[in-house]
Image 1: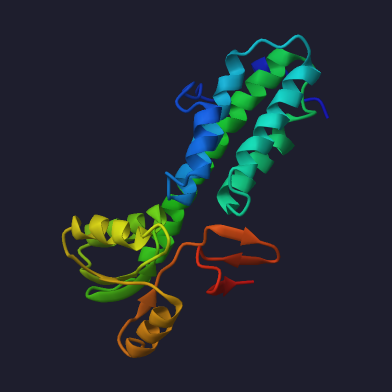
Image 2 (image 1 turned 45 degrees about the horizontal axis):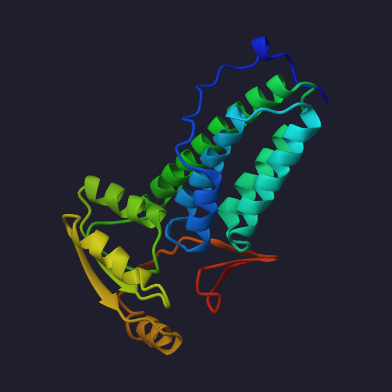
Length: 238
C-alpha cells in the first residue's frame, strides 16, 4: 500500500542526525557498553538517521541498505527484546511503503522519531504504573541493572516514599554494583548489595521473604515463547 504524499503526513520533528553512527552503535551493543534495554533500543534506532544523508540511485538500493543495517543492529544482540522490536517495527513500517527514495527517507525519519518517543514514553508509563504499588517505607528486591527500575524508584522518592533496596549482583558484568551505586545517590533510598549467584539468590529470597514486600525486575531478554530476565535461570512470565 502506497502511503500518502509527504505534504499530507502528520508532522514529525526531524530526528537528530548522526547522534550515534551505525557501526559504532553495533560495536557498543556487542561489547555491552550500554546496559539499559531502552537506551540500547533508542541508540540503535537513532543510528539509522545516518542513512538519511546517503545517496541512493534507486528505491530498491535504499531499502536493501536499510534492511542490511537493521539486520546488523539486530544481530548485535539477538536476545535483546527491545532492540528486536524496534528494528522489526522500522522494517514493517518503512520497507515496501514508498515509491521514491525521497518519500522512503521521509518515512524512515518519521518512524525513527515515533519509535524513540514510544520507547521513552513506555519507560515512563511503566515507572508510573509500578510506583503506584509503592508505600512509604517500602522494602524491595531488584536484580542486575534497569533504567526503568531506577526511574520507578526516583518517582517514588519524588512522592516522599522512602525505600530500602536490596540489589542482587549479576555476573559476569557486575551490574548489580552499578545499580547500588546509582541508588546510593538518591535521597531516602537505603541500598544494600548482595553478591549474586543462583544459590545466593534462592537463599536471599527465602530468608527475606517475610519482609521484602516487592521484587521489581525489568525484563530485557526474549526467547520464544518466554520472556526472561537477564539471568535466564529465573523465569518471569510466559
